[in-house]
Image (tube, rainbow, N blue to C red):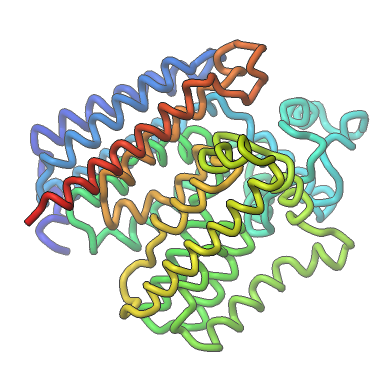
Length: 428
């Protein structure tokens, strides 16, 4: 254990920032127990938490390492006690766990097909009534479904076992990256408000897939080739986003790792394919073709052409960017963490759907290589919750945004990026 890992009292700056942040999360958790309209309180809490993070990043010292971790655990304990805020995705997780336990196949039909089923228990009838897009089969991969199934086995219809699984995944991420980070990176890793809110409060599952992908990279660096391949396969079978970084992880690991990844993916999907199910592919297809939310470049291209053409053009642009990044990275030693902030940043800028929790895929990479632009992206994306539903404005539709929202959200990120680029050019 290094000196910075031993427990020492936090500096005044860290104690003040951590205490204010803990109080802000506590108020939001308390309000989550009963209030429906929480947009203003949520955005205020996020603003306080981000201000505390940025203020502490420039004042924390290496001696604060353990104190940062203690505060991070405290934030998650508060979030564990909270109810989801302005989100209903967790009802799908609970329903999938129930259907998996009941039928052995959570992909067999959309929730809509069970609306008039008298055999559904009252508790899960209530869950069913709150599922969004009930006409669409689940979009979650087999690894997530097995995790939902485990959560259901512990406490049917309850969210707390699932939150414990996600907290375990977060601490895997923290454990894998902690020792190599300076104090600013450690602070962002354990205090990131987007991670606290989207994982701790709203129980979105991305942290589990991220942990598996980082575990694969960690195994690869230690030449545990089969384990690295299996971890990549598990990440791919959790969320398709892992596909964007899997080649970076596997590139120099040889055929054993690639083969292990393929076997892991097939093993997880095959039981559902043999039942005649397309697994998560049917739901993902509907999402890829029909859904649009909080897009930036895609929205601009769609306004000039059409939504279908925008998907094609943005897809081609992303493939070109991905290939350019991969080519440049492949010429390096490849020992460092892959450039996930560039890969997922480009993907989210060009995607038709950019939900706030999708930016969690930036979180560990920005912590490893902190940048003003990365932090701005993690902070600004929560503005996407300013929707017609949360504003109580029926004219916008449930998921529509006011005309000013996306220019403010993405304009703020662009301004920070321009400032960062200009600052670099001014350096000697």
